[in-house]
Image 1: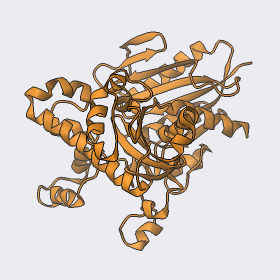
Image 2 (image 1 turned 60 degrees about the horizontal axis):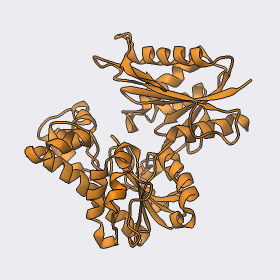
Image 3 (image 1 turned 90 degrees about the vertical axis):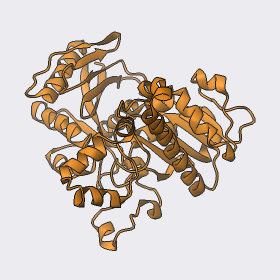
Image 4 (image 1 turned 180 degrees about the horizontal axis):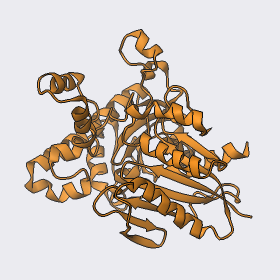
Length: 393
């Protein structure tokens, strides 16, 4: 009987899912079937799946997230065709200082992971809600948590420390780093495509609605821009990125914003959306740039922060051999890539504009001192692979 691995990637407003054929070795990187419920808790949620464009889906407005999970469950059961699900893999953003390898989730592990919700409020509670629901309905079905923090666990201590009092380090306040499943996939894919060339001084730019950079040496994380929380580092779609903590003190002390109001501002009303006042998506902003000074300022700041952080990581690496763009914006937005690379000419970056416009795997010129690549990410496959290994052990 064919066995499948189901992967769930749960965010605050969407749930992505994918089914991988666990009966084949090695585990195929392309799922048998995948899909997404989007706009959960919004006025017009949609559901799309392989071969079917997204369309309206009715969700219980009192319990929209549970309703979305039930919709996915029903669709998966309808497609099994005599096959069985061997395990469910979950992308869990934060493993704290305790979990840095995939782990089978039981009630005790779930309780531990709930402690990390304040560190990743956009993602952690929703992944855990899905795990809890499935533990209740299918307690014997293995569920494996795969952590976005795990890839950075072996960063040098100097990169993991925060400049707070020593007892803060002992209590677990440290820079964890995120987007680890994406970076883990890059460490595999880049080695396959470029061999030793990718094992030098490499920076991977994961640019999506959330965004970060990872500096790699021998395809291992040595530094990253996200830190204690997923707020740090690059300017993002709705998140600030790195911000003077004095600004937060000012907002609370002088402008009298509550803790909840500050959290809403930093996570949901800042970044590209906050500066532009229009959208968190560069695809929407770029056509309006010439006519809207705020949009122009938002895009300029977005690119500047990426360039600034690449420079900082290049300094940590002692130079740069390869720059890789991945995730939604990194893979598909040639204009953002072009602007970033134009500002990195001092490092010897030379962009092939035709290759860049075509989203080719290699978009640098033959004489560029830095190889510039576009490499699609595949977080779901990494999660499926690790869950497969976990239940086979």
